[in-house]
Length: 136
Length: 155
View (cartoon, rainbow over the protein chains, first blue to last red):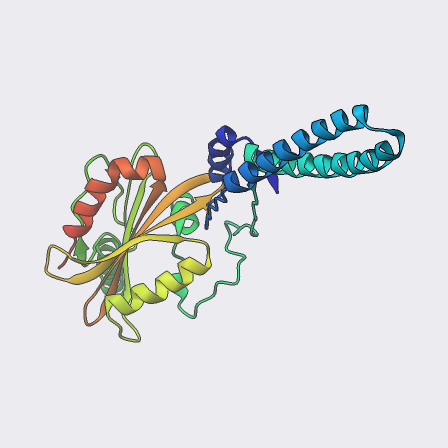
């Protein structure tokens, strides 16, 4: 698994194509725009509430101040939670997640499971064609 | 006297053998840009300066099968070996003989190759035409290779 900037993906793809055949390629896109907008709105609301509570805290009596302080503490926790969630989605959106699966190489001598009862078919292929020039 | 007859027979058989090693039952128009080798043991070979190769030979069509059947058998084997089929089409060669032409991609020693296999059959023989080279060089010669395959004929 790799996480890369979007502009580096084509470079990686070209590199992988140079090392072997890309047998299968699947591209998934997931939009997180809705989620990010929602989180930002909730964060703005919570931050405004937090500011209002701070003003209230400054102008409240001792007994009220204890209750307001508790509420401020709760709001700070929620704000931090929203900020963390937002950072997670921003991170997800900034980098592309790439999963590369390598399959075992098919060796030039044909050590794969391929078999046939026809002798002439076993001689087909690039290695046989090249070797037929080398062997007199 | 007897020795003389034996010697003559030997000479005739040598001439016959020499003729047979150089004779084929088919003709392939030499593809443009290829150097052709003298036919040996019934095998026609040609090569370009950048290593694109062409080889033509025949084997007995036993058990009898048509070109598409043999092509399917070959494709099954080649695919198991890691060849990826690019295309497979029926072709009619110069003499009217029908066959198939398949092209495959193959990764060999860090390079992408194209391997082409054309098969033609008649009642007695299966004619095998192989061509291949690195993808870049093969593509340059593909046209002349395909026209050579289409110009193939059985004597």
